[in-house]
Image 1 (cartoon, rainbow, N blue to C red):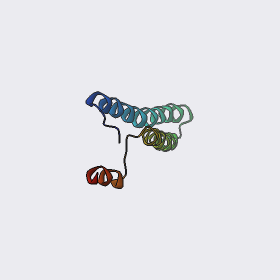
Image 2: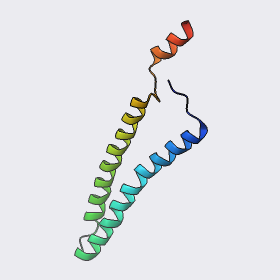
Image 3: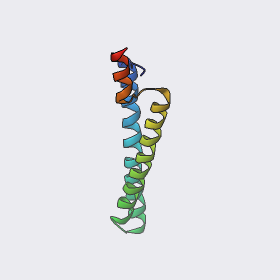
Image 4: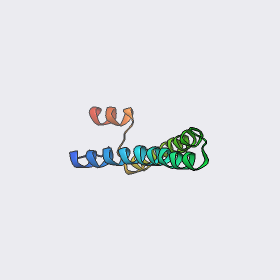
Amino acid sequence: MKQLTPLELIKILAQVTGIMVVPMVGGAVAGLIVDGLLATSPLYVLLGMGIGTLISVVGIWLLIRAGVRKGYTGAAHDVDDNRSG
């Protein structure tokens, strides 16, 4: 398992924050604009937040998958193997 430096951990935290905040806020703002134009409040705000949440979930899943492929996570048996050897 690869050990992360504090700077790498901060980078991952920033990525997670961006992946979560940008789509959700963007969806809400887009929903507010559309609701204002069509007078359908709060329909498109809720729809935009829902779509933003789905985009965030997919983004986090892709980030985790990339981290696993790079070796940032290890299974419990990996730790046990290192201790016994």
